[in-house]
Image 1 (cartoon, rainbow, N blue to C red):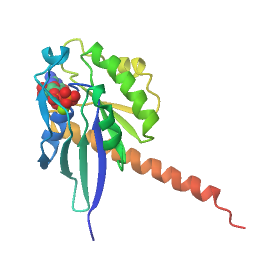
Image 2: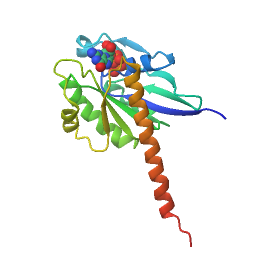
Image 3: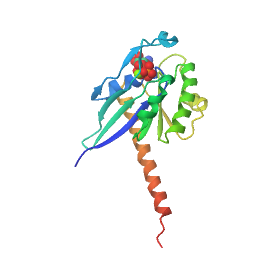
Image 4: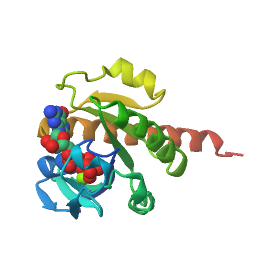
Length: 189
Ligand SMILES: Nc1nc2c(ncn2[C@@H]2O[C@H](COP(=O)(O)OP(=O)(O)OP(=O)(O)O)[C@@H](O)[C@H]2O)c(=O)[nH]1
Ligand SMILES: [Mg+2]
């Protein structure tokens, strides 16, 4: 039997940990294009993604997850749409320790909810840093309703795997509900 491939998107604002997550969780990795952060953001982080990151997580003999990481800066939002195509769901990372990033996350989340009607699971990174907002505070600030939010240190494979598996369960649950709705709509007469 051939392996299934699930494409998922890893997105979120600048410095939320997208490149790090893909680097540490993937068994196979094709490093994305990073350049020196040139503008006002340079004081936060030396390098930023301008293309895409790609990695493969081998879940088991039946399933590989293909991870497509987007750039974080909104000037690259044309890439967000391109990389969303064919994705089953989105892992949305948020730097819990940065008010600026949380503002940006709000705008970016609105974009993703509107453009791609995909299941989204939020990973709250940097919970260990001083001043990090709690999950409850982030939920309130971002006005989260349907999306699950879980803590994630992007440097820890187990944390990232939990995030990805939570998303896959959400994808399965959505498609199950859709099938039930389709059956309800079926005219048996
Ligand atoms: N302390 C701490 N650091 C973290 C955590 N998660 C990620 N990081 C660090 O945060 C930084 C994130 O950088 P990147 O992975 O380049 O972030 P990115 O989202 O790809 O950024 P752009 O491509 O510029 O949008 C790295 O230095 C990580 O080691 C965490 O939970 N705690
Ligand atoms: Mg990156």
